[in-house]
Image (cartoon, rainbow, N blue to C red; front, side, top):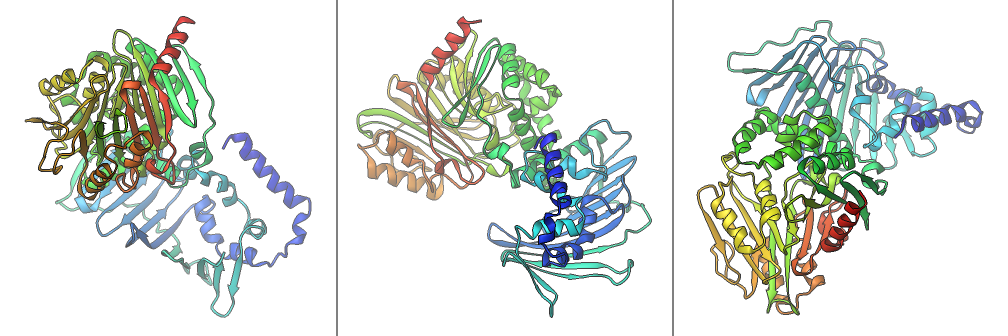
Length: 616
C-alpha cells in the first residue's frame, strides 16, 4: 500500500469518528468491550507499551498433525528484547541489545554472535519493528493503522464487520461463531493479563506480565559452539526472512493480482501474455543482465528474499549452519566450471540491482532438490506422431517463488535463442527449449554437497545456447563434470527423438524410449516416463490408457494431479518441432497443475525481438 493511500485510510477513519456517525453504535457495544479487554495485547503489538513480557503457548495443526510451539518475548526498551521459540524438533532464541545481537539454536548447541553499529535499514530494533516486517506485499499492512487506534474507536469500527458475542456467566467471547476467547484481567498492574483463544484447528494461551529489569544475556555451556557474524548480515537475514514469510502467508493483491503493465528498456521488453510475465532479452551478457534487472527488479528481490532469507533462515534453524555460508562454499567449488559470459551477465544484473555480487552468485547456485516428473511421447504414442515433452516441477511453493515467475525469451549474441521458464533474478535454467527444437527438463535426486562440477542449471542453459541436436546434448552431459544426482528428459523436435538421463558426478546412464529400467518399469513404445512412486504409476497408466490418441489437450492432462504434487511450482508442455510451449505457474492457492496454461510461440516472440532490435 502506498504512503498516500495509508494516510487517506487514516484520515477517512478519523472523519468517520469526528462527523458523529458513530452515535449509531453504543459505546458499550460488545466489540468495544472486547477491544477494551484486549487493549494490553494491542499496546504490546503497537509499541505503545515500551516494556513487557509476553508468553504464547500455541497448538496448531500443520499438515494435519498437531504441533505445539511456545513463544516468549521480553521487550526491555526501544532497542533491547529477547525472543525465543521452542518446538519439539526446532528452536531458536534471539538476544538483542543496543550494541549486540545473538541468534542461538539450542537444538544444535550453536550461538551466532554479532556486535557493533548497524548500517542496514533491515534491522531488528524493537521500536517500529512492525513497519519493517510488514510491507505492501502483505495484506496485513492494511490493518496496521488499527493497532494505533484507541480501543473504543477500534471497537466501534469492528462492530460493523465482526460479530462479537459474550457469555457473561463464563466471560467467554465468541467471534464470528468461530473463535472463542476468554480474558482474565489482572486487578493490579503487577498481576498478569491472560487470554485463552480457541478455534477448530488451533488454540493459544497468552500471558502478559511486566518485563524483568536485568538485561543480562544467559551464558552458554561449554558444549555450545560460537560463530561470529557481521551484525548487519545477521539482522538483515532475520528481518527480511520474516518479512518475506509474512507476505507469503498473507499475500496482498500486489502479489496475487499484480498490475499487468508492459515495459520496454534498452535490450529488453516485459510483456504480459494471458496473465503471465514474458521477458524478451537480447544482446551481450552485460546488456541482457542489465535489462533483466531493469524489467524485473521487484521479482528478483522477492526471489532473493524467498531463497536466501526466508528459506535460508529456516534451513539455518533446521541444520545449525549459516545457510549463506553453505552456498558460498558451494559457489567456491562451482565457480571454476561456470562460463565467463554467464558470470558477466550475473555481475551486470547485480550491479543494476545494487546487490552485493556475492549474493547474486550464491542465489544462482541454490541447490535445487526437486521432486518432479517428466515425459516424452511421440510417433505411435500420439494422435498424429507429434512429439510432446511434458515437464512437471514440484518444488517449494511454500517459499513463494511463484510470485517471481517469468518466462524468458533470450537471444544472446552469437548463440542459439531459447525460452527459459524461470524466476526473476535467476539466470540458470531448469525448464527450457531452444530455437533448434531442443527441449530440456530436469528432476532432482540426492547428493547435495557434491559441487565439484558445472551447476545443473548452468549446464541446462549451456545446452540451450549451444546444442543443435540431441546427440550434442548427450555429449555435453557425458563430457562435462557434473554435480549431485539429477534425472532428465531431453527431446529433439526435428527428429522426433527423446532420451532419459540418470546422472551423478561419477556416472551417466541414457535411457531410450520403450526401454526397461529398474526404476521406471517396463518400457512403453515411443514413450519416456520419469517420476517416482505412485506418481510414476499414475503417469504410466494414463499414457497406456491414451496411447495412440495423445494430442495437446491429452498431454496437458497427463501432468494433472496427482502426477503433479501439491507443491507443483510450474508445468510446461513443449511441442519443440512447432516451437510452442504451454506454461502454467502456481498461484497463492493452487498448484500449477490446477492453473490455466498459456500458449507461447517461441518463433513469433523471437521475431518480435528482431523487430525491437531493428528499432534501436
